Amino acid sequence: MIIDEQLLDQVSGQAKESERLRMNFNLHEALDAKAQRLLNALEVGTVLPVHRHRHTAETYILLRGHINVMFYNDSGEEVERYDLHPGNGMYGVHIPKGQWHTLDVMESSVIFEVKDGPYIPLGKEDILEGCH
Image (cartoon, rainbow, N blue to C red; front, side, top):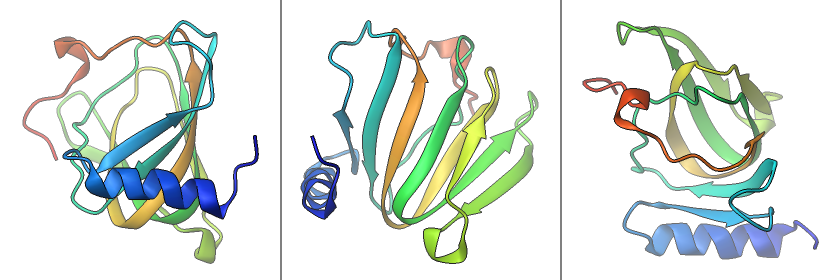
């Protein structure tokens, strides 16, 4: 499989039509795969709660667009912000295991996202209420 402009356009088009304004394109074959590798197309206005992954770190590489990735402490205070934009030489961020985080989409974007598997849905204890 080639990851090219046509594929990014396809996934972005699906994100634009999605109620959530985002769409995953999985590159792993199953939700129990040891590595979760995917394209994640994100549109302006998508809402991603402040959350954490207690069992895995996560890495984002921005293929196109512009996003801000924010880290939070346990009290819900923003402690770091990363302004990712390939045109400015800022390509990605590594999110440590257990780090509260979210993102804001500044323009139509696609990230390549990687984390250890298997896929584990977020539980209530992994969403930081009252933030963002």
